[in-house]
Image (tube, rainbow, N blue to C red; front, side, top):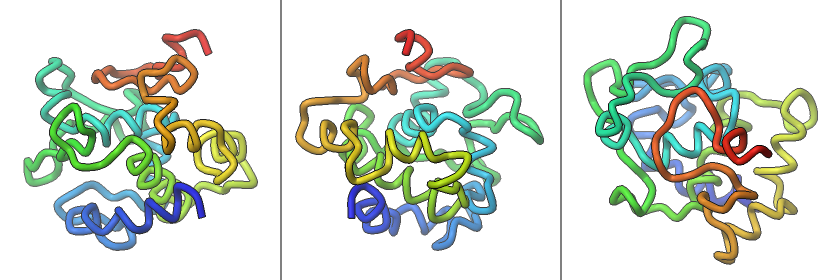
Length: 168
């Protein structure tokens, strides 16, 4: 139930590049903790999936995710030079913000191996549990990524979460 069930449903389009189990291919590896290394803050991953490569490049940002990532920050294009397609409606994508949250929760908790009861429990409760206020607000339209209490935003940025910018 909740966003992860939606994410499992919507991940099929992602699998063509990232692999069904997140092992990569044309797209980056997401499994084995890789998504968590690149995006220690879920807000940054949500924004990356929402805006995609072309928005990052248009903003003049040359990397994405954690700039201090073990192994170095990622360049916005994949191994073969392919862009990450934007999924958010502002950038021409087909997914709602709620659906993007579902995909990201599925990647983090099912494919990348985050533990919903351990180190990542607080994030899971806030963002990915069926009881989350953010989940219900995104689903019913009372919240958006630009809402201060959500703190994701819809404009590319690097090295900080919108939550930090909003003082949350």
